[in-house]
Length: 164
Image (cartoon, rainbow, N blue to C red; front, side):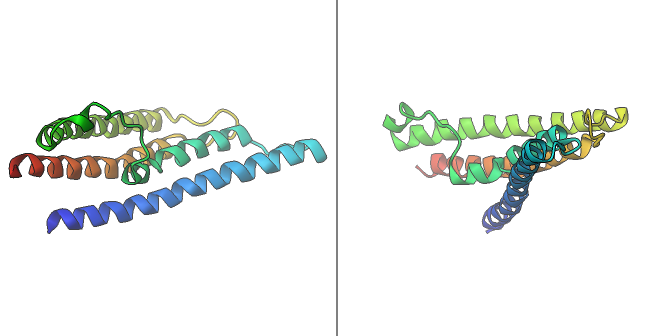
């Protein structure tokens, strides 16, 4: 019951974060088109276009990670594991999901620390002077649903190990 609610919340949050990532991708396309057209036709460039595209890439990639995990689009190498019995697969799945959960908890923590250091130092982008820390904090926040997904996968794999 509780796990179903957490899974539903995680899927919903991941869907919203994906839309933010899509907005970042759309912004990349718009800025690039306007900048190229402006440079070729009007000899005018978008001020800070490189910074905007760079930060939009960060948003597009960082905010799509959770939904990509839900869709199963990340690279997996499981040709050996697929040949094992179900219980062995569940044990290996539990171990892998636990390691991935620990990895993403570490990622969220270190990205948050990095964002804080950027905030304290007052770091901004090179040409547009856009503060960098909100984008870094955003990516850290966008990785939290990934942690929840790996936790749910770990518990699901663990339940398969215990059931058998």
